[in-house]
Amino acid sequence: MATRDITRFWEWGRKIICVGRNYADHARELKNAVPAEPVLFLKLPSAYLKEGSPIRVPRYCSVLHHEVELGVVVGKGGASIPRGSAMDHVAGYALCLDMTARDVQDECKSKGLPWTLAKAFDTSCPVSEFIPREKVPDPGNVKLWLKVNGQLRQEGCTDQMIFSVPYLVSYISEIITLEEGDLILTGTPKGVSAVQEHDELQAGMGDFMTMTFRVNRQDQS
Ligand code: MG
Image (cartoon, rainbow, N blue to C red; front, side):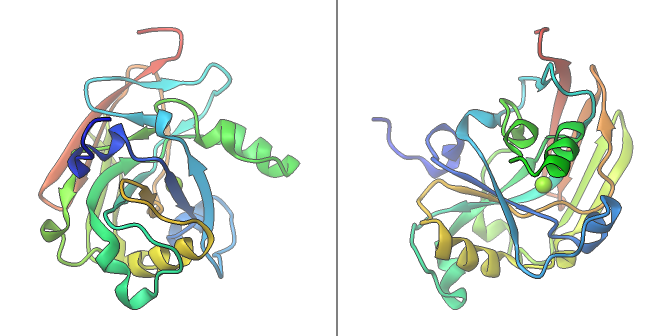
């Protein structure tokens, strides 16, 4: 087995745990209640996508939304991690997109069905290069933005998160044992919107990370 290089966590990390509705403004824009406890769902490692490859719109999806998010890369695994030592388990961060088949998710929600088709399809988790923890002294104060074809759609700051990074690490680890290489997506600020084939998505975190992806239909290269 290849050495576990945390700066290439997407090649071997086993879990992607996502938090929904973690920004009040975003919960409201989708007419969801602001949650009293984190809303969790999962993506799979097959959803990872790196720059240079296109985001695919699934054949069954007609409304694909972007969600720009702070990703937390787990360094040291653990279960039932106390909030006070949660940051000891964080190796670093990544700028991430939680690509969402919104029409499918709305249908799943109305039927009480799981979100797998809406959230976990291949290419639904574009990620940036690994960002070492030292680069982000306060994960509770990181600016995130996303442009589609040069137009600003999302602009927010992690200081608007309902549940903080240490809270989420601790909360999730009570339910799911965290392992080195796991990724936690911490939710998106308001401004989500639909993207079309051939659109260019550019996302940024603070003044130290940007990434760019193109969108294609699934049946094209
Ligand atoms: Mg999300």
